[in-house]
Length: 172
Picture 1: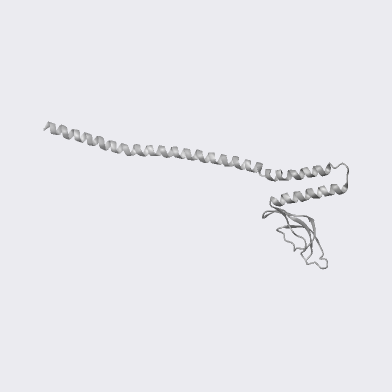
Picture 2: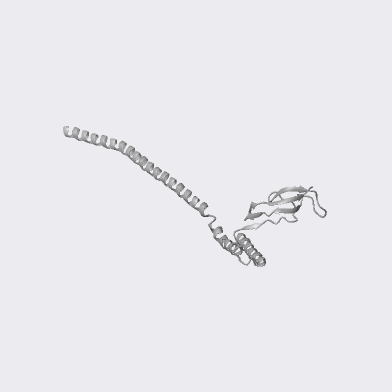
């Protein structure tokens, strides 16, 4: 009988141990999972910080060099103006011809980059594209509120106003 009691006691002890280990194991498993998730969180946080820094560097570089393409296209215009100024025999016809060629080259370069002149001549005043700097009485043959004179040309850059047209408008 003692053997049976010892055996039952041993079985009971083993059952207690296995129950204790089962209780401890889920807690340990959860703690390990928590540590693993905390590490993942730290890695993710570090990755987000790195992405933000990389984005800021790329954005700064883009802003810094955004005008490089336009500048490289305007350099030949600069060369042409320098050539026109360096004409020694001061022949005004050649000088004027050189400046006109340079002006044509500059306009072409700007148009290729998306800069377009705003057409305001004989149009009704539109405040989204124009800036009225004076108002005069309506001349004969003109409609009230129409553009009488363009003081300074305006330009669009793709769909945005780069500089509004400065105009004189007829009075309503």
